Length: 488
Image (cartoon, rainbow, N blue to C red; front, side, top):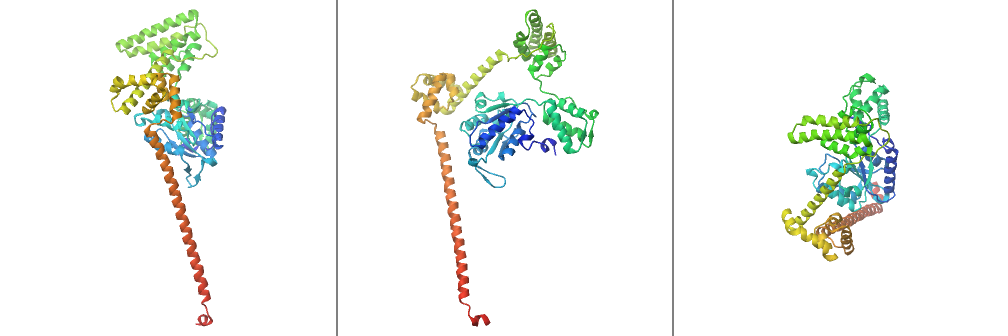
């Protein structure tokens, strides 16, 4: 058995995480126990820091059942609506067959693991399904985990309470490894555990796997036994910039080459943050070096000579680092390139326009191209200038969200339209049918319950009648006994 599963935390006390994170999660769970519904939790952070383990340990601590969908499951609109939708709005039965009532605090935890991967082809529509479900205020606690929560839409993030996990410290990992060694009866040199923890780079899961691999067939582990390949860690561009701007360290070139950023992207990061650290002559020298790096990148783009990347990267890292006169101290809050933020906003706007066009095309039974040419500008005009009732009916008919209406008609108009639709109860036919379906489903359930109760009552009456017949028969037999029959 893998030690990762064998020593997975059973309760919240066993979880290795910052105290502030544990306090927030426990407070959230206690409010659910008290019958106060809370926003879903979104646990974000790198792999191996205990996001899933924390969720499962929390469920064990409070005696909740768990419904889990992980990265290996297909999470389309149908799957999420069928499994998660039913789970969050219905009561549950435990593995032992016991009925668990949410009114009595007997809840079930819905765990959606690695939800940032929900945008694959097989997951088409999965995020929109989640948003629709979360807006209906589920009656059961939900936890979502994501390695990169910023891949999710802002609308989904705003519906959740976000908790950021950080990579674990070396001393935290070493304590866990020591407990595992003690449980397995293995004597281990502390230097060996420190080496394993440092190599894991804050990933507890990786550290435990490395320990198990080294301990295979051994009862004692010495420092010289730890021969593990240097684990490729996910480097942070902010740490690379700290090395460039704060220190004289030529290894920053190697770090930059291992970054998950192309040199074209890295030079934009450095260009944006250079004036925050350098000034005067240092700034002039740094920009001269950076301009030469940009010349190499231009040659790569024009001629396709990608081997020139190494020269560009060396100049923008080591070259900029040695343009300063002395190492720099203190903390500097580096910022993302403004040009990227602008491009992100443009892309988001374009994606929302595409979403609006798809809705118009679907509900008007035409192609997206035809919807753009014939219907889009008419819908925009009507939403902006038609009377509020007509505009509300159009918005509801095309199933436009408040954000989509705000994009084409303005925020104040969007709020006015949505508020009017809510106040007057204007709904799409499909929504009304769905509500009627659930009402009919509930009525049918009640009818079935009545039938079951009636049948049980009839069975009890039949059983009572049988017992009464037996008693009468015995009484009659006793009455018929005479001395002649007794001695015959």
